[in-house]
Image 1 (cartoon, chains in turn blue, purple):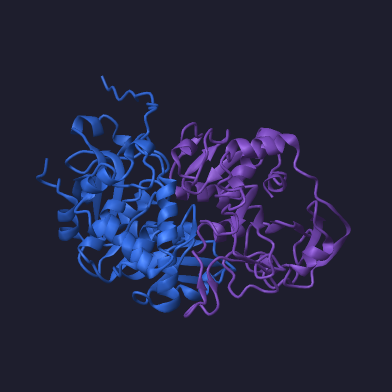
Image 2 (cartoon, rainbow over the protein chains, first blue to last red):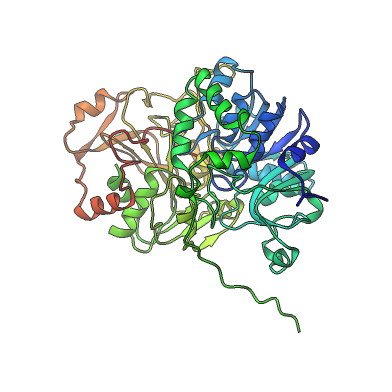
Length: 298
Length: 255
């Protein structure tokens, strides 16, 4: 079903993420990373993006290696189970494929930068980061009066992957949320990709679980497997082997280019990609449902 | 290393667990001597029981099932800012004699020789938790006289009262646990000293592999070997040796 806010990933990226956009992704940290959206950015050869996120397990590394990125505002860029991000290293150390501007943060300060933007204030103070040299390299962290003032970071767009959403953009996610809520509130717009596109009666049955106001959501993409290789509670385990393989291949530029051809340029969309992976090995089959909440009113 | 790290966890502690070996250390402590500890994860989780299956990251589904709290990161950071986190674990690529950690840049930040992944939550833990511990492969290139970039501050320049003077709320590092031994800090911080040496190694080994003239405690001892219970718990939670085997990913830096 495509219509209204419901579009394909290619359409969502084409319409809402122009060259030069600032984009928040990977906001739930290790789970629910919108890899399908990231790969579509690479396929459409976006340039000069300013990425915003906490740790971006491997996704930011891929976008940097593909030459899509001008600036990274993040606490950590690498491969969580394997270690260093090889494309990130090449960009920072050698300017390959392009020089990269880095705004270093901690996890807490990325969150505060987004809350500041969400609340429309220039900065929020914290007692974290005092004594850290991160203050020396990031002009948006200002020490004054015994506190660190974290300047607001306002993404143009936040892209999230969730378990389910409806056609209006009411998104349900569960498990840890990281900085997802503040990223969605801070951004001008939100693209939601989801495992299941559900009827509004499902999302509205539990309004506490809706992540953002629907008025923020500009596009809804039904994209099963859109977070692979990151985990999705109730749907997919983390594909550790896939992360390991990426770490190995991305050690060299040639290896990374081959990886990119195999998994991004040679697959037209996520549905084709999902046919190439061993989905059964990582699919969660033992379901554990929460007890329903009673929203009765009369 | 895992067993030694687990002993830093006291019963009843609220522990900011993080990733990699500390996840195992937490599981070992819960099963050995700290049955009332609770773990916090910056992804937005609190747990009591360790996850029942292997974890590659703190956000893996088995770490969510059975959680005491699944929430947003800023809520977890709020507890730490309030001084309610007793112990944190931080990974690092480099540590110096004053317990400062570098996980950002080797060399000049504008043109680094090595770009490391960054702070993750490390700087927050170093500044806000009541006490913290780092785990490190013991090599001269990792245990250095002074780190070139302080991502996560320990005791700064080592002068008395450095943390307080600079407004850091938490207490600072209490131990550097390495593959060769345990370095500790005296009350009030300052410079690390060698407190114990793991079985099979010598004080001379440790000093030779340290990038500064390491002080040795008068009562330096041999680290107690892992108990059967500690080993059993470690094997149960890392059955394939992903974190603890011969090619384990223990030396890196995690978010």
